[in-house]
Image (tube, rainbow, N blue to C red; front, side):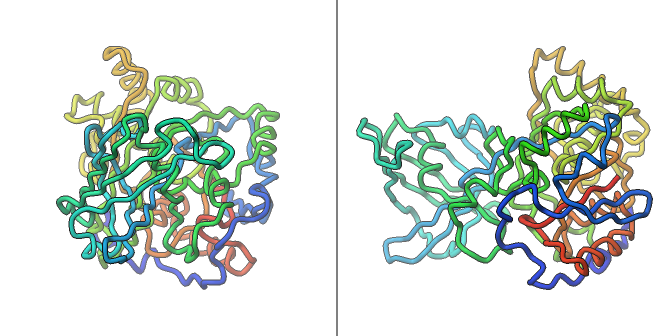
Amino acid sequence: MDTNLRLSDIDYYLPDEKIAFFPLDDRDQSKLLVYKDNIIIDSKFTHLSDYLDNNCALIFNDSKVIHARLLLSNKEGAKIELFLIEPVSPTQDFASSFLQTGMVVWKCLIRNAKKFKDTIVFNVEIKGCDGQVESKSGSSVRITAKKGDKVGDMFLVTFMWDNEAIVFMEWLDAFGKIPLPPYIKRDTHTIDEVRYQTIYAQQDGSVAAPTAGLHFSEFVLQSLKDKKIAFANITLHVSAGTFKPITTDLVLEHKMHQEQIIISKDIIKFLLENKHKKIVAVGTTVARTLESIFIMGAKLFLNFSQPTKVEQFEIYENRLLEEVSVEDALLYLQNYLRVNNLQEIRATTSLMILPHYRHKIAKGLITNFHQPKSTLLLLISSYLGEQWRRIYLHAINHGYRFLSYGDSNLYL
């Protein structure tokens, strides 16, 4: 590891006018910057399949953004904002937590936390498809939110409600808001319900969109199918830590956020069947998940402890992991699933991908333009080296839109 890696190494000037604060009218009409063989090509996302062939296989993140922002008021009328991050009790599994009745505990970021003294009580009306309150019993629910212990920069918050017919996800969908990134300084609009979500999202759990996928339309997916390009899904539930800027001068002092990943039998089988193809990750979340899959399999191969928990720096600190082949890592994961009679593995990753990292699985990347001083720029550097500066300068000078609702890149 380069222990002298500094914040200035991943900094650049991003004018506010280059940030996309709203999505385009059509999601696939974004620009596409293609970087291959040291050449920059300006194109459109609708032409993505022109730059790929059937020797490529794409992996998507099918995580779905939840209504993670809760806007509350205390008894004195002070505004308090809760940002749900991850479930704690009675389960740490996202899918199970959403189906709980009566009570859940989540880690939350709280804005104006000093005004949240003890409990806040609020009512939620569950509306039907026509937008009207349903007449059946269970159409209204009374929620009590109680602030608990502080955990890092978050708090434990207990949510209790009085209607056992209502599951957590029902009232969260009805009351919460889509959590736009903090640099999009505007209120949530109706359009964000659709556009800050990929068209293939399935697994509820992200508090930020895997934004590389926002450009994909049915037209683009069909154009990939027409070229016989294989693709499959994995799941990483994106944490708010994806927006957390690095504030320490020495980059390695930054603490990475932990995120939940779901690895199915099908994705391991897909990766083994397509091991001779160029795997292209649709987004940095997919790149991190694929490399975490490799590390998990390598830990199983070497009989290391806690194989389903990937730590921030362990791939750099133990060279034995790097020496395991991708095929062996995948086969050991496949065997782990079979021996334990599992259809999927629910794991966590805090992997920090640094500029010198050599990707074992994802050899190509589709991604957006990222914030200065971010861990995502570190990951980009692992594909591009210092060429990322040339590419970003080209994008700034040629009218590209930046960040979550911005334009796209393809690195091969």
